[in-house]
Length: 358
Image: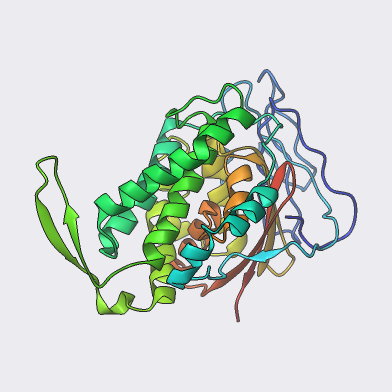
């Protein structure tokens, strides 16, 4: 999703390069630093009056990457706006009838027509820590809300996965089933998970019976009155998942910066991108703050959810912009207030626009 502005879109980097742009408080510009491909020497920084390996005024020390995974950055200008921008906080249809309409022959034909093509661009492998953590976080948040019997959820998840897998495998030759570090399989299975989560939140019952072990023992699940409204279930799920993702990103080998130090929106967004890029979420990441530090534009190049975000939107599902949820959670924790996010996609990138709400 291209951020508003002028000029040509940035060229996609070669697959071997992974970069993140780090914002710093000098008029919304971005810095350049990193290892060249092969990792022999450190790249030069733009002249900003500083010394060492960071410009004056940049508060965080540079984090080195392994050889062959350079940190670089570029000053960028964004293409103009697009009608395909979507509000990341928009609620999916939560009427139970929506699930029945989606299974009609006409709706199925429309969905097949709107199904995005497979991603052909090279994508980085995900780290096991990030891939497993993202899937587990969403599952555990839903389980903790007590809005659905988890054995029913698992059944729905399995059916969705079975219905979609044959065609996905035909379109993605060589994809490794069950291997979450295979970015194509993660893209597929995380989309199926959020489709099942959407159904669980949409069709929640006040009381349900859940089988909780292999022996078939059951217990009664009582939904909290606060979750009687379907819209409130969605909002609560997003907030809880965002908080859980902050904990996950803080535990990665390339961890999230200490949340207490993230007091402005640009630094929050950069820290989330830094941690997720370190976990292999995308080949590259670009972050560009506005001059007033109240708006930030970002680009993920060939990210792990490139196909799934488009297909989830076509299905009318909840969507799984993990980075957006983490940014919003950190902003709430920092006392910055709500953050509005818009999202957009093209064939190789995901774009975000973040704005602090007055």
